[in-house]
Image (cartoon, rainbow, N blue to C red; front, side):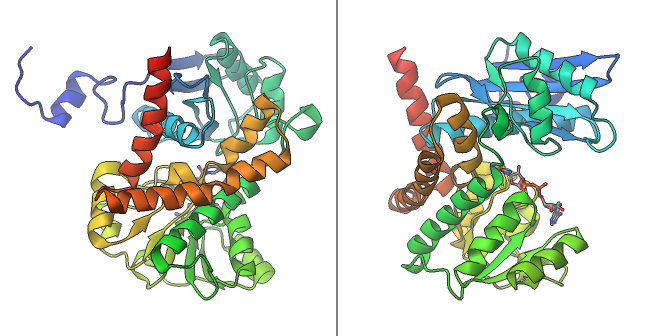
Length: 365
Ligand code: NAD
């Protein structure tokens, strides 16, 4: 083995799994295949130092298996830091099922997937993510106990999205306190990109707080419905990133903060629900910092959902769920101050705290 520096693209070709850009010392990656049901899934277990890995299952029509692998690697890693920073005794994991949830998700396929989850003996606990519903988790529960996000009748804690939205709102207020010296969002211009389960619940809170909310989504019917319900404005332009605003709230897809968008951004704060908002964390975290844009780390402020499902495992009640989620305000403020005091990115400040908790536990073992 030579010691010369190897180009990352070359490494990618030589070592297609461990050399993957998104590979970050994941403990285990499980490829699940079943000819009869057509199941093709990947379970990514990033880290189990703090506890069993927990994270949702996403069903998505990936353009390639590489995309699916990349997604599960990034998402499972994100779960490690999300749970660590939220003080939960959970590791990070995630699963992806390759296929169209609308046309290819059958009960047989979900049961087979549940059997694969079960075969891991609790090292990975699944939950809902994009393309999944509570009823799917209820079905998976018939073949494995290693599943959360169940119906309330089965001991579940119900839809996590309003809790996620509450956490994002708290993180946004913490970021506003840090940036503007007040957490009052009245009159602040907020663009919410994606008004699905979380986005809509966030819009509700923002409009109650008197923020000037603009919404964007690819679903026109939904836009009109949410506009009428909360008296907010639909963004009719075609380049949201270039607009003057106080807060940009990405609540649809990941990686919207990237080489193309950062140059255009005029926002003062980014705080939203989407996972993996920064296309490349270190690089884009630094670019935001250089521009003076405050980024509230996604894995911190969108943790309400995992706090909600963790309650199913630890048996705590709604009051405790809300208390833990509300605490996101204080943690956000602490991290933003820490980043400013130490001249590091907010991503790095959040990551350091999460990693320190993992290292501490590792050293105790
Ligand atoms: P959702 O599927 O209910 O909503 C997503 C919305 O984004 C949809 O209305 C969709 O039409 C819209 N959308 C898709 N592409 C878009 C685009 N290019 N521009 C604008 N809008 C677009 O999902 P959700 O549960 O609300 O989750 C939103 C985000 O938050 C996801 O990235 C998810 O991973 C993340 N998240 C969700 C939770 C949760 O509890 N649901 C928890 C943590 C993180």
